[in-house]
Structures are given as structure tokens and as C-alpha cells.
Length: 144
Image 1 (spheres, rainbow, N blue to C red):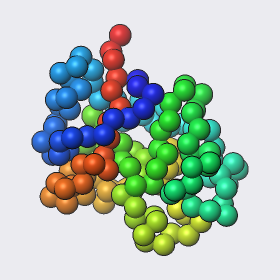
Image 2 (image 1 turned 180 degrees about the horizontal axis):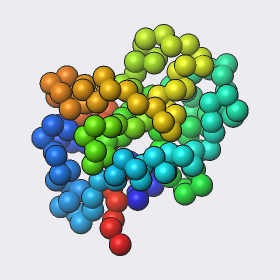
Image 3 (image 1 turned 120 degrees about the horizontal axis):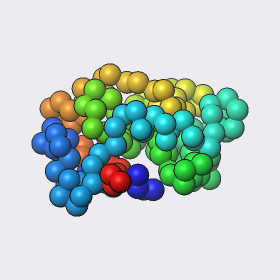
Image 4 (image 1 turned 135 degrees about the vertical axis):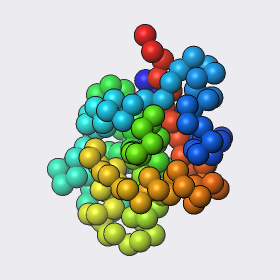
């Protein structure tokens, strides 16, 4: 699995097989493998996350540290990472937590390992996602 996610240049609805990843000999991660990687985050809400500030724009916060696998996953509340599972997205919520005024504690939740946001999935793969591909990313996985 790649250390950094890559920005998408195509609309998610137009790339069911993640054509760009396949063209370079890679594949998109499964939702399960992403959960394993997310489970190794360097902080957990309430223990290590600085609850006096929101994660968006916080360059010194624990969400920007590499996890035990050397990956940086779920680090920006705006960015959403896609997997091969079109029923789940990981990482950010497109800014809902920031612009929606969740507050200091709840603003960390979109970065949580088990965060599920069905309305975000609908936005990504529905007509609303057509002009938002710059906020979506995928992490190439080289099958061994």
C-alpha cells in the first residue's frame, strides 16, 4: 500500500475499476485493508487528539503523523479516500464537520477508524460528486 494517497483526476462514478491504478499495475485497497491501516492511527479521539482545536488546518496535530505502518491515512477532514468498495469511503467528510460547526470534539470523528457516513458515499458516487474529484483520493496497492 502506498504511503501517500493520490489525488483523483477522474470522476468517481466514471472509474469503477480505478482505471488509472490498474493501468500502472496496481489496484485500489479494499475497505477492509483500509480499516486495518486506519486502526493503526497515531492517536485516538479523547486520548491523544488535542480537543482544544479542530483537525482541519492543524499542521502539527497527531493526524499528520505516520502510523505504525508508515502511512498517513485520514489526515484531512475535507479529503475522502476511496476504496474498491463503493459502499464505503474513509477519511474526511468533505468539510461537513468544519463548515457544519461540529465543534472541537466532534470535528475529529470523520477521521476515526470506524467512521461511516452514508450521505458522504451518496455524494461521492452520485451526481453531487461530479465536480468534487479534487477532494477525493485513492491509495495505490501493488499486489504481491
